Length: 174
Ligand SMILES: Cc1cc2nc3c(=O)[nH]c(=O)nc-3n(C[C@H](O)[C@H](O)[C@H](O)COP(=O)(O)O)c2cc1C
Image 1: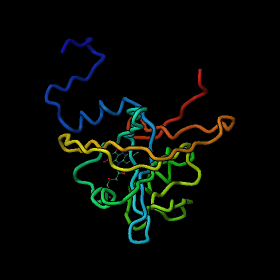
Image 2 (image 1 turned 90 degrees about the vertical axis):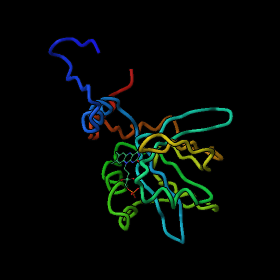
Image 3 (image 1 turned 60 degrees about the vertical axis):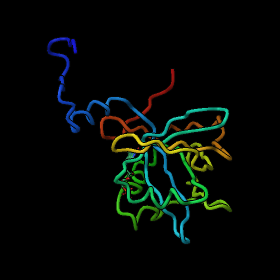
């Protein structure tokens, strides 16, 4: 790879730790992916959310094959996906932490079919699994949307932004 001397740290070995660092330069939002299973909310935080298709309506998330939660979520009839707001940094850490405390003090609602949606998210999607694609140490999950809601555009709420392994801010839009 041609690099500008002195400006780039080159990683010819594609070492995972350094790859993670390079990937981290791409900022992303964060979602909560969750469902009620055996009467309890089950879920995780994911920054790999991407909108994919309008017709059919599809989004994707990318989950580590090591995830202990995905095999449970995968079997749920419906999954809720909530786009987190910038006041959700602690909720996000909690949703990535100890399984038994992920929903402590988190305000959420459960749809009739079991999708778990956070009450104060920016936008919320009621989904089913459309397709799973093996992708190395991750699985790319395409989700089909069945219902969507979002906050009113007049409300000025910023998204939670994950950037370089931490939470950043999205300044006023141009
Ligand atoms: C900001 C943030 C973003 C994350 N994004 C992803 C992601 O896109 N894919 C993923 O597999 N795990 C992601 N995680 C980790 C999961 O939330 C969770 O910690 C991980 O799946 C391990 O828990 P589990 O074994 O219960 O699945 C993220 C964690 C944080 C804090």
